Image (tube, rainbow, N blue to C red; front, side, top):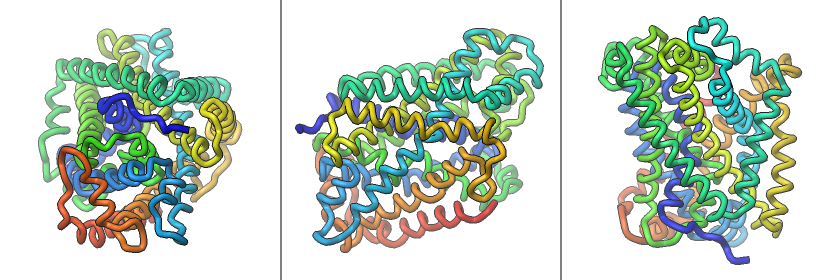
Amino acid sequence: MERENFGSRLGFILVSAGCAIGIGNVWRFPYVAGQSGGAVFVFFYLLFLLCMGVPVLTMELAVGRASGKSAVLGYKALEKKGSKWHIHGWFCLAGCYLLMMYYTTVSGWMVSYFFKFVTGTFQTGMDAEAAGGVFGAMLANPGEMGFWMAITVAAGFVICSFGLQKGLERITKVMMAALLLLIVILALHSFFLPGAGEGLAFYLLPDLERAREAGIGSVITAAMNQSFFTLSLGIGAMEIFGSYMPREHTLAGESVRICVLDTFVALMSGMIIFPACFSFGVQPDAGPSLIFVTLPNVFVNMAGGRIWGALFFLFMTFASFSTVIAVFENLLAGCIDNFGWSRKKAAWINGIFVLIASLPCVLGYNVWSSLRLIGGRDVLDSEDFLVSNLLLPIGSLVYLLFCVTRWGWGFDRYLAEANTGQGLRLPGWLKHYFRILLPILILVILIQGLIPA
C-alpha cells in the first residue's frame, strides 16, 4: 500500500502545530504563568522551548521521515539488527490511547461550553456562584459529559477515515485558520477592556520581585515543564507526521515553525485572559478552574458577554479538537502499518475502542467519584499522570538516546536526516549537548514529576 503524504508544506506545519496546540497552551499556560509571576516565567519558557523542545521535536520527526513508518516499524527500520528499540513504539501507541481516554472528555467540555453560551445557559448578569455552578452540574451529569465526548470521538474518526489529505489536512487547515483569526479577535477585544493595561503589564513586563515571591527556582522549574510538555513529545504523536513529510526542508527549520505557531497561540491566550481577569478584578492564578469557572464569570459580566464567551470556547474547541484528530491519525496509522488494516476498518475499530475506553474518565466525576487511583488521584488525573509524568519524559529520553548514541540509530545518521533539505541546519557541535546535558534536563523533569507535591 502506497504511503500517503501531505498535499502541501503548509498542511504539514498546520497539522503538526495543531497536534501541539491544545489544552496545554490555552488552559495550562495562562494559569501557570499567573501562578509563576507572569513575564519572568514567559522568558524562561521561551528559553527552554528553544533548548529542549526544538531538539527533541527534530528527533521524532527524523525517525518518522527517515523510516516512512509509524513508531513501531519506524524504530525497526532504523535500529541495529537484534536491538529492541522498537518495543518503545508499542508504548508510544499505548500512550496515544491513554491520552485520548481523557483528552476526548476535556475536548467535549469545550464543545459543551460553546453550546451553553450560544443557547443562553450563561446570561448577562449571572452571579459568580451561578456561573461557577454550571461546571459542577456538568461534571455531575454522566449523560451530558458522555454525549459530548462521544460527539468528539465520532467526529474525529469520521474525519480521519477520509484519509490524510482529504480528511485530516483539509479540516485542520480550516480549523487552524479559524483558530488564529479567533485568537486575534479575542485578544484585540481584551486590549480595549477597562483596566486591561494592568493585566498586560503583569503578563509582559518582567517583575523580579513577583518572581521571588513565587520562588525563582519554582518559576524556572514551571517554565521548563511547560516548555517540555507543550509539544506532547515522547509518544510518537509528532513522529507520524515526519513519516508523511517530503525531504525538501530541514527538520530544524520546520520544528522552529511549529514551535513558533504553538508559542504564538500560548502567548495570545494570555493576552486574552490576563486583561479580562484584571479588568473584572479576578485573580489570574486561579488554577485549572480558570477556564470553566473564573472566565465564564468574567464573560457574563461584560458587554456582549454571551458572544465573547461563545467565541472563546469555539477557539478552545478548535485548539483541543486539532490535537484529538492528530492523535487519532497516529492511532490509525499504527494499526494500518502493524496489522495491515484498511483505513476504514482501523477507524471503526479504534472509534469503538476509544469510545468505551473514555467512559471511565466520564464516570470518574459522578458515578465513580469516590474512586481514587494513583496517589489518591481521580480517574482523569491518574491517566494524565501516567502520560505527562511518565510516558512523555521517558519517551522523549528514549527518542533522544536512540538518535544520538551509538547503540541506537546514531548521531551522524540523525544529523544527516535532520539537515536534509533547505533551511536551518543543526551544527555538529551540538553532539555533546545532545548526549550529555539534554538527557540530564529530561531526567530532571521526570524526577520532578514523580516527587509528590
